[in-house]
Amino acid sequence: MNFHILTLFPEMILSGLSHSITGRAMDKGQISVNAVDFREYATNKYKHVDDYPYGGGAGMLIQAEPVYLAYEDLVKKMEKKPRVIYVTPQGDVFRQSMAEELAKEEDVIFLCGHYEGIDERVLEEIVTDQVSIGDYVLTGGELPVMVMIDAISRLVPGVLNNDVSAEFESFNDNLLEYPQYTRPAEYHGKKVPDVLLSGHHANIEKWRREQSLKRTLERRPDLLQEANLTKKDLKYLKSLGYEADSK
Image (tube, rainbow, N blue to C red; front, top):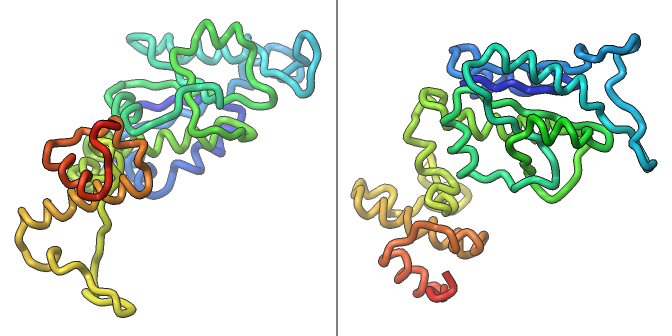
Protein backbone atom coordinates (compact mmCIF):
# COMPACT_ATOMS: atom_id res chain seq x y z
CA MET A 1 0.00 0.00 0.00
CA ASN A 2 1.23 3.47 -0.86
CA PHE A 3 0.72 6.55 1.33
CA HIS A 4 1.34 9.98 -0.19
CA ILE A 5 1.36 13.02 2.09
CA LEU A 6 1.18 16.61 0.85
CA THR A 7 2.78 18.60 3.64
CA LEU A 8 5.04 21.52 4.52
CA PHE A 9 7.01 19.25 6.89
CA PRO A 10 7.92 15.99 5.11
CA GLU A 11 10.76 15.26 7.54
CA MET A 12 8.26 15.25 10.42
CA ILE A 13 6.16 12.58 8.70
CA LEU A 14 9.09 10.41 7.64
CA SER A 15 10.78 10.61 11.03
CA GLY A 16 7.60 9.78 12.91
CA LEU A 17 6.75 6.72 10.80
CA SER A 18 10.24 5.28 10.37
CA HIS A 19 10.17 3.41 13.69
CA SER A 20 8.46 0.36 15.17
CA ILE A 21 5.85 -1.51 13.12
CA THR A 22 5.42 1.11 10.39
CA GLY A 23 9.18 1.45 10.03
CA ARG A 24 9.61 -2.31 9.59
CA ALA A 25 6.73 -2.39 7.11
CA MET A 26 8.44 0.33 5.09
CA ASP A 27 11.75 -1.54 5.16
CA LYS A 28 10.04 -4.72 3.92
CA GLY A 29 8.16 -2.90 1.18
CA GLN A 30 4.75 -3.75 2.64
CA ILE A 31 3.88 -0.06 2.71
CA SER A 32 5.52 2.99 1.18
CA VAL A 33 5.41 6.53 2.54
CA ASN A 34 5.98 9.40 0.13
CA ALA A 35 6.01 12.81 1.83
CA VAL A 36 5.81 15.65 -0.69
CA ASP A 37 6.67 19.23 0.27
CA PHE A 38 4.18 21.30 -1.68
CA ARG A 39 6.29 24.39 -0.99
CA GLU A 40 8.47 23.10 -3.82
CA TYR A 41 5.56 23.78 -6.18
CA ALA A 42 5.27 27.46 -5.27
CA THR A 43 5.89 29.60 -8.34
CA ASN A 44 6.93 32.84 -6.64
CA LYS A 45 10.51 33.88 -6.01
CA TYR A 46 10.46 33.28 -2.25
CA LYS A 47 8.52 29.99 -2.31
CA HIS A 48 5.67 31.44 -0.27
CA VAL A 49 2.61 29.20 -0.11
CA ASP A 50 0.39 31.37 2.11
CA ASP A 51 -1.36 34.73 1.91
CA TYR A 52 -3.93 36.81 3.78
CA PRO A 53 -7.53 35.62 3.52
CA TYR A 54 -10.01 37.66 1.50
CA GLY A 55 -12.47 39.42 3.77
CA GLY A 56 -9.92 39.83 6.54
CA GLY A 57 -9.43 37.81 9.68
CA ALA A 58 -6.57 36.50 11.76
CA GLY A 59 -3.82 34.35 10.35
CA MET A 60 -2.73 33.22 6.91
CA LEU A 61 -4.23 30.79 4.42
CA ILE A 62 -2.48 28.23 2.22
CA GLN A 63 -2.91 29.07 -1.45
CA ALA A 64 -4.58 26.72 -3.89
CA GLU A 65 -1.96 26.56 -6.64
CA PRO A 66 1.01 24.87 -4.92
CA VAL A 67 -1.30 22.27 -3.41
CA TYR A 68 -2.95 21.55 -6.75
CA LEU A 69 0.33 21.36 -8.65
CA ALA A 70 1.76 18.90 -6.11
CA TYR A 71 -1.41 16.81 -6.30
CA GLU A 72 -1.40 16.87 -10.12
CA ASP A 73 2.22 15.71 -10.18
CA LEU A 74 1.34 12.78 -7.94
CA VAL A 75 -1.76 11.50 -9.70
CA LYS A 76 -0.27 11.56 -13.20
CA LYS A 77 1.91 8.64 -12.06
CA MET A 78 -1.11 6.58 -10.93
CA GLU A 79 -3.45 4.41 -12.94
CA LYS A 80 -6.55 5.84 -11.26
CA LYS A 81 -7.36 8.85 -9.13
CA PRO A 82 -6.87 7.94 -5.45
CA ARG A 83 -8.78 8.89 -2.34
CA VAL A 84 -7.58 12.27 -1.05
CA ILE A 85 -7.98 12.76 2.70
CA TYR A 86 -7.95 16.33 4.00
CA VAL A 87 -7.29 16.44 7.74
CA THR A 88 -9.63 18.94 9.40
CA PRO A 89 -11.60 19.24 12.68
CA GLN A 90 -14.67 19.72 10.45
CA GLY A 91 -14.40 16.22 8.97
CA ASP A 92 -15.93 12.86 9.80
CA VAL A 93 -14.39 11.28 12.87
CA PHE A 94 -11.78 8.67 12.01
CA ARG A 95 -12.85 5.22 13.20
CA GLN A 96 -11.63 1.64 12.92
CA SER A 97 -14.14 0.96 10.16
CA MET A 98 -12.60 3.79 8.13
CA ALA A 99 -9.12 2.35 8.70
CA GLU A 100 -10.33 -1.02 7.43
CA GLU A 101 -11.86 0.61 4.36
CA LEU A 102 -8.74 2.62 3.50
CA ALA A 103 -6.46 -0.39 4.03
CA LYS A 104 -8.00 -1.89 0.89
CA GLU A 105 -6.81 1.00 -1.29
CA GLU A 106 -3.62 0.83 -3.34
CA ASP A 107 -2.86 4.56 -3.01
CA VAL A 108 -4.12 7.16 -0.57
CA ILE A 109 -3.18 10.85 -0.52
CA PHE A 110 -3.29 12.84 2.72
CA LEU A 111 -3.38 16.63 2.65
CA CYS A 112 -2.02 18.45 5.71
CA GLY A 113 -3.26 21.95 6.39
CA HIS A 114 -1.52 24.68 8.38
CA TYR A 115 -2.13 28.22 9.54
CA GLU A 116 -5.87 28.98 9.11
CA GLY A 117 -6.38 26.21 6.56
CA ILE A 118 -6.33 25.88 2.78
CA ASP A 119 -8.10 27.82 0.02
CA GLU A 120 -11.54 26.22 -0.34
CA ARG A 121 -11.34 26.03 -4.12
CA VAL A 122 -8.58 23.44 -4.21
CA LEU A 123 -10.32 21.41 -1.50
CA GLU A 124 -13.45 21.28 -3.64
CA GLU A 125 -11.43 20.18 -6.64
CA ILE A 126 -9.24 17.39 -5.26
CA VAL A 127 -10.47 16.24 -1.81
CA THR A 128 -12.66 13.13 -1.60
CA ASP A 129 -12.82 12.82 2.21
CA GLN A 130 -12.53 15.29 5.08
CA VAL A 131 -11.47 13.51 8.25
CA SER A 132 -10.88 14.46 11.89
CA ILE A 133 -9.23 12.49 14.70
CA GLY A 134 -11.18 14.37 17.36
CA ASP A 135 -12.91 17.53 18.44
CA TYR A 136 -9.86 19.68 19.03
CA VAL A 137 -7.54 21.86 16.96
CA LEU A 138 -3.85 21.15 16.27
CA THR A 139 -1.26 23.34 14.60
CA GLY A 140 -1.16 21.15 11.50
CA GLY A 141 -2.32 17.92 9.93
CA GLU A 142 0.92 15.96 10.26
CA LEU A 143 0.22 14.33 13.64
CA PRO A 144 -3.32 13.21 12.69
CA VAL A 145 -1.98 11.82 9.41
CA MET A 146 0.62 9.75 11.27
CA VAL A 147 -2.11 8.45 13.58
CA MET A 148 -4.25 7.39 10.63
CA ILE A 149 -1.37 5.82 8.69
CA ASP A 150 -0.39 3.82 11.76
CA ALA A 151 -3.96 2.55 12.20
CA ILE A 152 -4.33 1.71 8.49
CA SER A 153 -0.90 0.12 8.06
CA ARG A 154 -1.40 -2.51 10.73
CA LEU A 155 -4.40 -3.79 8.74
CA VAL A 156 -2.35 -4.30 5.57
CA PRO A 157 -1.66 -8.06 5.17
CA GLY A 158 1.77 -9.04 6.47
CA VAL A 159 2.47 -5.85 8.42
CA LEU A 160 1.76 -7.42 11.80
CA ASN A 161 3.85 -10.43 12.70
CA ASN A 162 0.64 -12.16 13.72
CA ASP A 163 -2.14 -11.04 11.38
CA VAL A 164 -4.72 -12.69 13.62
CA SER A 165 -4.05 -10.13 16.35
CA ALA A 166 -5.67 -7.37 14.28
CA GLU A 167 -8.91 -9.32 14.32
CA PHE A 168 -9.27 -9.40 18.10
CA GLU A 169 -8.30 -5.92 19.21
CA SER A 170 -10.38 -3.05 20.45
CA PHE A 171 -13.20 -2.05 18.09
CA ASN A 172 -13.41 -5.45 16.43
CA ASP A 173 -17.20 -5.97 16.20
CA ASN A 174 -17.33 -2.43 17.63
CA LEU A 175 -16.33 -3.74 21.06
CA LEU A 176 -13.38 -2.92 23.29
CA GLU A 177 -10.73 -5.58 23.74
CA TYR A 178 -10.79 -7.95 26.71
CA PRO A 179 -8.08 -7.63 29.42
CA GLN A 180 -4.87 -9.58 28.80
CA TYR A 181 -2.17 -11.04 31.04
CA THR A 182 1.30 -12.56 30.77
CA ARG A 183 3.85 -14.07 33.19
CA PRO A 184 4.13 -14.17 36.13
CA ALA A 185 0.82 -15.78 37.10
CA GLU A 186 0.72 -13.61 40.24
CA TYR A 187 1.92 -10.01 40.49
CA HIS A 188 1.58 -7.72 43.52
CA GLY A 189 -0.93 -10.15 44.97
CA LYS A 190 -3.10 -10.16 41.85
CA LYS A 191 -3.58 -13.46 40.05
CA VAL A 192 -4.30 -14.18 36.42
CA PRO A 193 -7.93 -15.37 36.07
CA ASP A 194 -8.07 -19.15 36.46
CA VAL A 195 -9.91 -19.65 33.18
CA LEU A 196 -6.89 -18.37 31.23
CA LEU A 197 -4.70 -21.02 32.84
CA SER A 198 -7.21 -23.83 32.30
CA GLY A 199 -6.32 -24.67 28.69
CA HIS A 200 -10.05 -24.97 27.95
CA HIS A 201 -10.29 -22.94 24.73
CA ALA A 202 -14.08 -22.72 24.59
CA ASN A 203 -14.26 -21.39 28.14
CA ILE A 204 -11.44 -18.92 27.41
CA GLU A 205 -13.23 -17.58 24.34
CA LYS A 206 -16.48 -17.27 26.31
CA TRP A 207 -14.68 -15.39 29.10
CA ARG A 208 -12.96 -13.07 26.62
CA ARG A 209 -16.20 -12.26 24.83
CA GLU A 210 -17.96 -11.49 28.10
CA GLN A 211 -15.08 -9.31 29.27
CA SER A 212 -15.21 -7.39 25.98
CA LEU A 213 -18.93 -6.81 26.42
CA LYS A 214 -18.54 -5.80 30.06
CA ARG A 215 -15.66 -3.42 29.37
CA THR A 216 -17.50 -1.80 26.47
CA LEU A 217 -20.62 -1.31 28.61
CA GLU A 218 -18.55 0.25 31.40
CA ARG A 219 -16.24 2.44 29.31
CA ARG A 220 -17.85 3.06 25.91
CA PRO A 221 -21.55 2.14 26.05
CA ASP A 222 -22.12 4.24 22.93
CA LEU A 223 -20.29 1.60 20.89
CA LEU A 224 -22.93 -0.99 21.70
CA GLN A 225 -25.41 0.83 19.46
CA GLU A 226 -23.48 -0.35 16.39
CA ALA A 227 -21.93 -3.55 17.76
CA ASN A 228 -22.51 -6.97 16.22
CA LEU A 229 -24.28 -8.64 19.12
CA THR A 230 -25.64 -12.17 19.32
CA LYS A 231 -28.58 -13.29 21.44
CA LYS A 232 -26.07 -14.63 23.97
CA ASP A 233 -24.32 -11.27 24.03
CA LEU A 234 -27.59 -9.45 24.66
CA LYS A 235 -28.53 -11.87 27.42
CA TYR A 236 -25.18 -11.32 29.13
CA LEU A 237 -25.41 -7.55 28.77
CA LYS A 238 -28.92 -7.60 30.20
CA SER A 239 -27.55 -9.38 33.27
CA LEU A 240 -25.22 -6.39 33.67
CA GLY A 241 -28.07 -3.89 33.44
CA TYR A 242 -27.99 -3.08 29.72
CA GLU A 243 -31.38 -2.38 28.21
CA ALA A 244 -31.65 -4.30 24.95
CA ASP A 245 -34.37 -2.05 23.57
CA SER A 246 -31.93 0.91 23.72
CA LYS A 247 -29.80 -0.69 20.99
